[in-house]
Length: 270
Image 1: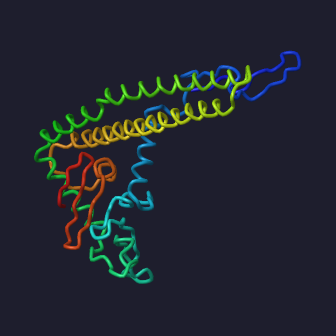
Image 2 (image 1 turned 90 degrees about the vertical axis):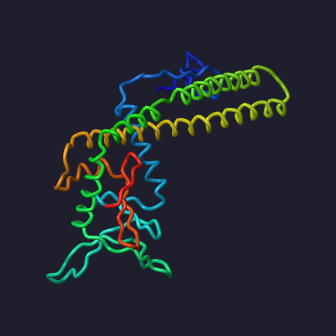
């Protein structure tokens, strides 16, 4: 989208130009150039940024397990820790990053990568038992998430409201520039239009964000369905791509349970 009319020529002889402060009409041109990033990809990335922000903790992508294993006691992420770093018993374990941060340390256990992988396979293989019914449920969820007709109607109404208020604001500025009038009345009218515009813009941004999140969730479920449909029998080897595609998080509890939450919302004890 390109905004035209940011500046205008005051005198065509001297070529003097001035920043447009409402003296002349401004307008947008949609699809004025080829986008570097496709709109759908942009929306998905923005939804992922929002998801990471909602996590409430510092996000890390340094490992396939980073920011995906959660402590059931304090809700913090698990992180890799090196034990016996200078001996032949050196090993890497995963434990709560905030385990010793507070007065009361978390009782959740540490986990080895081999154990995480094995328990993930056990949980995923449980899904395969009722695969067809699960895929049917996922299709219903996708249909619900991608049906944005109500949101689109609200968005169209808000865009019309913004267009009307923008036009009224420009007229207000032009009238004030053309002739003398009460500046108190002008300021009151102008501020009223600005407040009306800001209120509509806030609602517009919120609805656009909600729509992007819904479509991103639908895409995640679609990826989950694609991976699930590829398997017809129990798997015995851990696959990093499968893990990243189907797992939202894995929650470790102090009683030793590791509960996997999949992208479709199903939670299973591994």
